[in-house]
Image 1 (cartoon, rainbow, N blue to C red):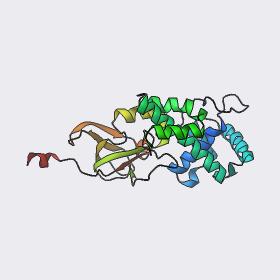
Image 2: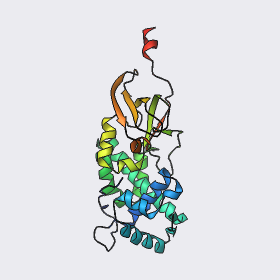
Image 3: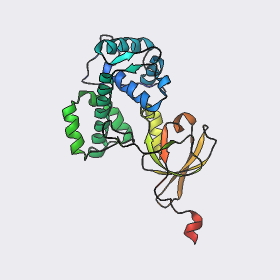
Image 4: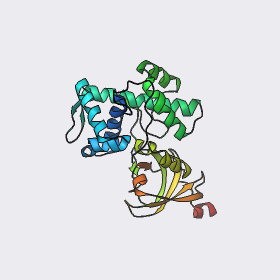
Length: 250
């Protein structure tokens, strides 16, 4: 899922025009480790995620290795303890910027993500701490992803593998956030954190037919979710199941 990623404002740029700042690569590596098997975190996957060339990734990894953030990069990329701390700090600032933009300024999920790309790298950790307090100590970004350091793990499974039934959308992987057209479709389909859906049919690992539900469990609209999207949306069982049609008639 390649994407066009805006160069972060306020961050230190490399000497090569069009390349991203080193922080963007650290953030990408951190995200891929959260959402992919470790053996998939290789330079080619980072290039695909960021929408840059393999040569750009190689240059960035060389810089990160010199800075002490990367311990190894062939074949898989391995961060040092310092690299993990820096990457977590970067993603935390990004998530908090998204929260502020959506919760306080009323931007949509898509707008909040795009704007956070532009401003998060300019925030200091001190400002991020103050923002976290002002926002009421949130544990997730608006897309449901845990904020590093405070996020709470909730048992959830990919939409691609669950059995038919009613579920609550738990989180949308960062990899989907980075493709604007896909995130817009996810929003249209009602696959947002906290939303009720019914998985109607479809083989595990294949396209899944889902219906968005209202608070009474009534189906509003049906959608077909492609496998590459379904495996990057996590769902969980609701605390209480909405009433079925037969139960309402009794």
